[in-house]
Every structure is written in C-alpha cells, then in structure tokens.
Amino acid sequence: MNEETYRKLISGQNRGFCPTAARLFLQIAALGYIVVIVLRNFLYSKGILRTYGINAAIISVGNITTGGTGKTPLTVWLGNYITQNYKCAILTRGYKTRQKAKGKRQNYEDEPAILTESCPQAKVIVNPDRVAGAEQAVSEYKANVLIMDDGFQHRRLARDIDIVAIDATEPFGFGKLLPAGLLREPVDSLKRANAVVITRCDQTGESELVKLEKELKAVNPYISIARSVHKPVFAQCFDGKKFAVEELRGKKIFAFCGIGNPQAFSNTIKGLRADVVGSIFYDDHHCYTQEDIAKICKEGERFKADLILTTQKDWAKIAAMVPADKGRPFAYLAIELKFITGENQLKRLIDDVLAGKILKD
Image 1 (tube, rainbow, N blue to C red):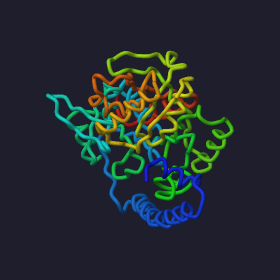
Image 2 (image 1 turned 135 degrees about the horizontal axis):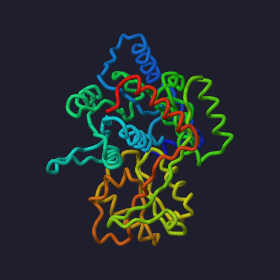
Image 3 (image 1 turned 30 degrees about the horizontal axis):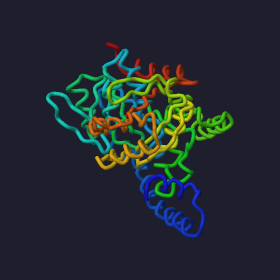
Image 4 (image 1 turned 90 degrees about the vertical axis):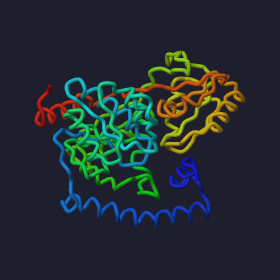
C-alpha cells in the first residue's frame, strides 16, 4: 500500500466493508503501539530510563505526526538564527540517507544535504546515536548550541528547548496513533513542548487556526505558539538557471515528489497560479531509480510540461541522475519558512534560554 492510499484509508475517505475492516485492524494494532509509547514516556518522566546531558545548549525540533510537517525549513531557520551568535551544530539521524566520500567533502542525500547547503555556518552531523553525535559536536567542533533535528520523541538526550512543528492542514494525524492514524505519540505529549510552530497556515482558514490554537493551549497553557507559511523563493533548474516565482505563473508544471505531505507541495505550486498538468507522488523518503527518472521524463513529455518540478529534498537525491538530454527542464522549488505571527516571541524564548545557559562568543 503506497502512502497516498494509506492516507485515504485512515482518513475515512475510502468507504465500504473492506476499508472499514482494514481500519478496525489498524486500530487494534495501534493498541500495542500506544502501550509502548505511554510506557516509554512514563519511564523517562520518572527517571527510570536515563537521560544524558551534554556540555552545550540543546534545542530539539520535532513533530508529533509522521512526515510532512515542515520540520526541515524550521530547522534551517533556527540554524541560521543561532549561528549569528553561537557555534552551532545540527544533529540528524540521516533517515534513509547514504554518506559518500568525495575527497575531503561529505555528500549527503535528503534532509542532511539541505541542511548542509542551507545552513553553511552550522556543522551538520549525521549519526543515528544522538548522544554520540552531540559529544562529537562539542569535542571536535567546539559547538555550544546543538539543534537536534526530529528530536521530540528522542528522550535519551536532554534538551533545553522543545519546538514542535504542526501542519495546519492535518495537525493531529486524523486523531489516532500509528498505524491507525499519523500520530507518533498522544497529543498530551505537547505538555513537554516549549513552543509550537504551526506550518502551512496559508492552506487553511482563520477559524481553523484559531480552533487549533485553543486546542494547543488546552493541552499546554504555557506553550508559545507561532504561525508560519512555506514561502516559495525561486525555482532552480538542472543547469543553474533560476526562475522567479512570478515567472511560474501560467506555466505548465509536471510535479513529482517523495515527501510526507505531497498534496501540500501541489497546493503550493497552484498557489503560484501555475498549471499543474500532471503529477507523480512517491512515498516519503523514496529512493529514486533511473527507471523512476525515465518515467518522470516520459510523463513530462506526454503532458508537454514547460517545467518538471520537485522539492529541494527530492532534488538532493535525483540531481546526479537526470540525463543531459532530458528534454523537458527539471527544477526544484526552493522555499523558506516565513513567520506570520509569533516570531519575536519564539526568538525571545530562545535568546533567554541560551543567555542563561552559555556565554556568547
């Protein structure tokens, strides 16, 4: 079952006996997951499972649902803000990435590649063992602020600030835990969070945002809440040519991606008043093959697309695979996190914690 079909199933869009029976089975399976998660959080809260401290300030960026919340743009924003005053390292587990040697340079796929390119002043450390990665950042690179990417569920490494990204279009994963829904842990876990950044606020209404903020405050009255959007900046082609977002208006776009919320990517393109003539959506963290690229090229030709467009995350994986005689131009859509409300409040939280923890260089 691919990710799109799975989402339609758990959301209740698919009707009938078989989908209903499948949802019941998933709800039964979720009971075991709930027990494990609740027990694990209890053991950490009581100190039975050990939490490791590091001689640096640690800011965790995470989510409570699987995939597609906009966590990476938030990490990029945070990394560029922190490096203005501190020695910063970003810890990432490197999910489904491959590290390759190329001289003295390290090349990464997926999120680590984006973080390395987008946060040039921060050291990106890929290590599934977050404690070991943190120790390396402090001992080898003298970092005094560590950003732990996808760290909300990683309780083993102590943190000073927990920031959670929540997608406005589907904030609580259809209200159920995995595999019956998209929740990685109960919503009440937000009691541990210091701040929430609601992403993609331009893809839902004001009344829904107000309702969401009330729900968040009901869980944690002290939580800081910010609203944000993913602002397209430009589209960059294989040959380095850039298109301003205004130039995409009216163009025929064939879109493809392998991210947690592909519909949000499609909506972003449509928001630029481009004509999405066709699309292929793969599962999150899809590992592309030459056959995939050939199929994408063929579809782009079939739809007579002016541009074959993907995300920056996918581009990091397919750039070396695109043939020179590809026909229709390939490009990725670069985005950045732009705050609508709450940015100054979030910065004050970060500044106050860091000022009390370490001295600026």
